[in-house]
Amino acid sequence: MKQTQRFKRVGVAITKTKKPISKTTESTNDDSIIRTGHRPKSVTVEIKSKSSPKPKIAPSVPISAGPSFENMTILPHHFFQIDALDLAPRLLGKFLRRDDVVLQITEVEAYRPNDSACHGRFGITARTAPVFGPGGLAYVYLCYGLHTMLNVVADKEGVGAAVLIRSCAPVSGLKTIQQRRAQLTEKPVLLTGPGKVGQALGISTEWSNHPLYMPGGLEILDGPKPEKILIGPRVGIEYALPEHVNALWRFAIAGTPWISAPKNTLMPQ
Image 1 (cartoon, rainbow, N blue to C red):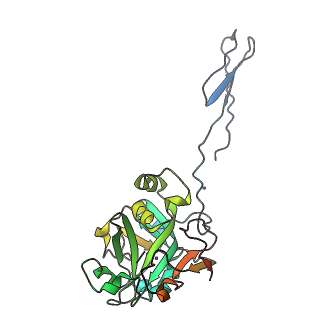
Image 2: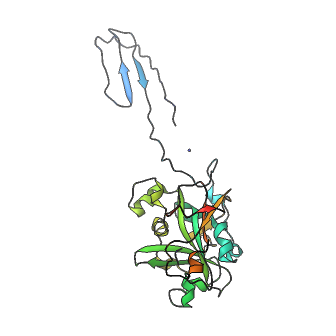
Image 3: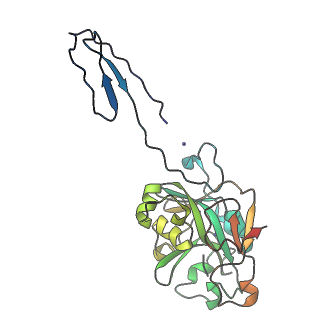
């Protein structure tokens, strides 16, 4: 299972009534330019303030004034205790928060009981036990021993279903995300892929069984509902039965660049 805002230029004129200046002086300072005439009675200082532009990050869902995450609601336990196929699209637009990092969920995949692509098909093991827990827990596993995959457990306890978080858009903590990903980029490649999401959040398999509905650690916050959703078959499950390979259980926010490949298999819902 593969896991659901410049500064205006400031002109300051300072008049000095000291002795006349007999020569012309030009400052080479990058932030200010001093110009004087021949034997003038005053010196005019023009200060130009420069500001570095903020990173331009394409949002998945427009956020007018930027959300105040301290006042946002953590999704309750019961929100997750529904069929994975229903939970998956409902997670789109919601926010994942850990320390200073906040990500908006843009792409997910649903994995259900009796699904030949779901880890639950192996039954309860030391690795898959969290999948059979109550909805709202985290299920984290390593893919190929390298990539940390974050899943949100769905449905009632004992069912064995989850939603894989495939892609996200950065909302807060960009520097931390870039450090963890070892990529100084603001492009979608930063977070389009489940392993990238896990790395950006700085989690490991030890986060399995963590309640995502409890404050502290890793949380899922309420967020805006997408206007349009794309659907398509899940990625990388060629080993599964044809009916499951072809099932349209992959969901993404329409119009956002923060979606993993392949994109050509996605279509309007």
